[in-house]
Image (tube, helix red, strand yellow):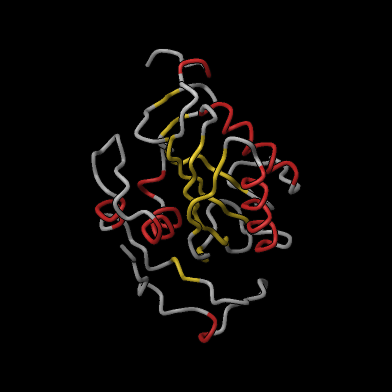
Length: 195
């Protein structure tokens, strides 16, 4: 693909999806704080927020993750939006020490409208999103008909191709840390997808 600069994108609004996650520190506070920070940025309107979901971590031994997604309306270009996400991560103490290591906050740009973009620091759609139930499950809750421009499939169609049994909705008011009791989660795999 040809290089893209911020000037290639007109100053009009585009839909975007951001995935949020974290597994160390005050995770829910960080996730909710990140959404509040996004809402304060000129050129970003937070439209919908998913519920929070718990999933097993990849990589070295570490606590489970809590993940969710938000849909946005943005007038920022993709590189500008990425820089905003990185700045918010840093504000919440994100330190990049190892691949797939624990993190206070992880913000991933999943979609930017129907654009496809491949740069050294930014690929849209996110190159792994179609394999990640911790992205697809919360996204199916708030944007089930969003179409992945690479595959032409909706989120509902993509979610049917992955095993979602290891993604559990987090019960309201849950304090993180330790193991979850049965009454603190809904049945694994019984994720309601709303249209």
